[in-house]
View 1: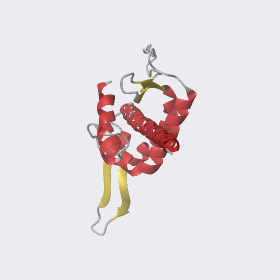
View 2 (view 1 turned 180 degrees about the vertical axis):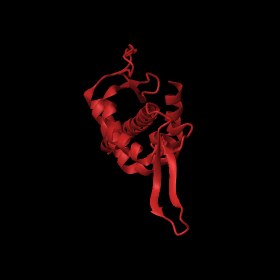
View 3 (view 1 turned 30 degrees about the vertical axis):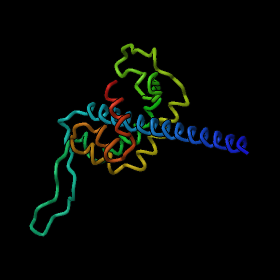
View 4 (view 1 turned 180 degrees about the horizontal axis):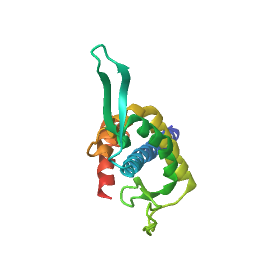
Length: 183
């Protein structure tokens, strides 16, 4: 009688361990996609001339004769941010996977330089499955958290990765956030 119970218990423990491992991998990819999305958005915003300004608001005349128009930097305008978000997930193809030998946690880093300089890719795994998983996770994040992304990037904010990926969306756990920041 003990034999079958022990086998069932072992199978259940293996299934639970597999489930925990799969859940952690899912969180690693979502966290990595969020952090890459923030990097890509920040870089794209930095490429726009900060002197370019657009007018937003209502162009109707108020009863008092004024208009509700305000000027905002083009780079941080809602329209520009929406346009950048349409393209940002395509850049996930420029990322590879690195596995920490101690913790087995996966991190994702850019493997294609923006300026043509050589990069150290010795520990990065370049795989189309990684790129497609990151792209899918990125698209899901953009779809589910569009308002939060616009909110953070519309106003210059410090430490967007931590605020957006960990605190607001809970896509990264604290231990993983600390590990990413060490890289």
